[in-house]
Structures are given as structure tokens and as C-alpha cells.
Amino acid sequence: MVRVLHFTDVHVVAPLSRVPLRDWLGKRVLGAANAALRRNRKFVGAVEKLACLAEFVRSEGIELVLSTGDYTTLGTEVEYALARAAVEPLLSAPRGFVHVPGNHDLYLPDAVRERRFERTFADTLASDLPEYRGSGAFPLVRLVGDDVAVVAVASARANPQPWRSSGRIADGELVAFRRILADPRVIGRFVFVLTHYAPRRADGTRDTHLHGLENADDFLAACRAIERGAILHGHIHHAFELELPELPIPIFNAGSTTYAGREGLWVFDVDATSAQVTRGRWDGARYVLDAASTHAIR
Ligand SMILES: [Fe+2]
Ligand SMILES: [Fe+2]
Image 1 (tube, helix red, strand yellow):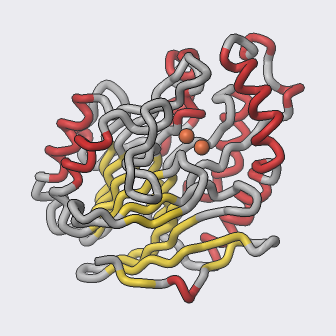
Image 2 (cartoon, rainbow, N blue to C red):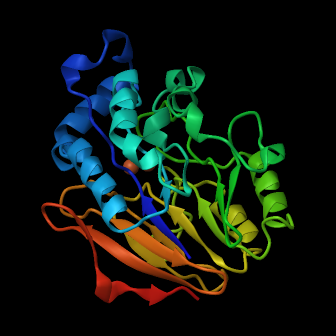
Image 3 (cartoon, protein in one colour):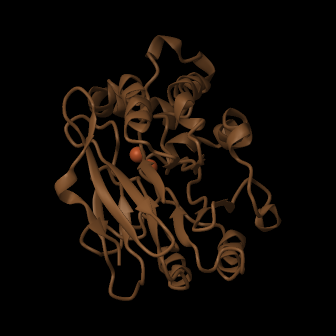
């Protein structure tokens, strides 16, 4: 049995006075204004809540921690440092920590050029099947015990136009993803697929082309090869669970684990033949499991 936490979109916000002037260019000014006006209030307790999440991991016996990105708001060095410090206790989960960047972590091309995600989290990006990696860290595979595999697929990119926040899985990465799912070392395991973008919205429809995953259909087609598993994502800040008739595995969005009033997370218990999921929530002082929500995954 492996006990697994999925959290996402914690969006730490650095005090504006600590962001160096050179970061204040173009979209970031707009993004910052937007963040200051709309998001800051909702994510204001993000760092403190991450400390509570570490306590939840200890008290609930979580062994493997999975995150689907958007650690930061503007992708600045200051926010990266804050986020890294805040998630530090989670990185040493007994069976590991696996994650992907979100679009806010790659907010402008400089975050990509400077490889901020890869530098900040360099010690977390080892793959058990490195032969499938592209030019970066992904797709990244972890084989956990005999029964579980985690496959992390990058879908976020910089979006220099302020009105666009869409994503795409690079074509080469999708090819590698298909090969990973056909690898005998992965077949037969319960496969957690991590990506930042939602392949579908809560009602099963495609997200808009300005906000969604451009090649969601190709991604879902590849996921049809998975016999047992779950797709985990974030980006849409409302937690939901979704089953699609054409897909053998369910989709879970943790929404945002720190968004005030709708904090989301999922806990999975997986063994060789069965898996169940429980929804978690914030009770005002700590994260708790909603025992009544526990159910088997088909
Ligand atoms: Fe987000
Ligand atoms: Fe996002």
C-alpha cells in the first residue's frame, strides 16, 4: 500500500517590495497588478498553509507527494526562493516527491531562459527512466515500489501575451510519453500522470484555447493505454473529479490547495490490485480528510 498526496497551485506571493526592479517588465507589470488586485487576498496565507500541509503529511502517513505546479505567482527569483523554502518539508516524503512546473512558474521567457524551475528544484528532478527525457527534465518517471509509477509530463510554457495562459505538451514529449506507457517496467503498475493543464473542464468539455491545453485530445488519446491509474492536474482553481466515457482512468484536479475558501487536495491509497481516493479540505486551522468522500477508483 502506498499513500499519496496530490496538491497544486499554491501560488506564493512575494511582498512587492522584495521583487527586484529588473523583473518589472511588460506582462509582469500587468500580471502583478492583476495579482495584487485579485489573487493576493486569496493566496495570502499560502506559505503558512504549506507548513500545515507538511503537518498533514506527517499525521496522515503520506508516503509519496505529487504536485502539479504553479508554486509562484509571477515566477520571480524571490517567489521561487519562498516557494522552495515552503515546500522543503514535503520534498523528503518517504517514497518521494514528483512535480511539474505550472505556467505561473514560467511566467515570462526569462524564467524559462534562466531555467528557474530546474535550478530551484534540481535535486527533485531525477528520473528512473532517464532515457525518455527530452532536452529538459521531462517526461520524468518514478517507479515506486512494485505497484506504482508516476509519469510527469510538462505542459506549461511562457505566455508573453497577457491575455493568453494556454499550454502545450511538446510533440517529442508526447511521443516519449506513449513509449513510457508501453514500457514493460511501467505496464501493470498503477500510473499517476502529472501535468499542469486540465485536459478537460469539470463538465467534461474542452477548456478555451486561450486558457487550455492545446493538444489535450492527443494527450487523452495517449492516456487510453493506461489500464489502472489517474491523471492529476491543476490550473483551474476549483477541485473536481472527472470520468470520461472514452478514458479508462479518472481525472483529478486538486484546484488550488491554498485558495482561501476552496482549498483542494486528494489522498490516494494504492496497492497491487485496488485504489481508493479521499478528498481533503481546509477546516480553518488545518488540512483534514473528508472520510465520507472515500471511494474506490475503477
Ligand atoms: Fe494556478
Ligand atoms: Fe496555471
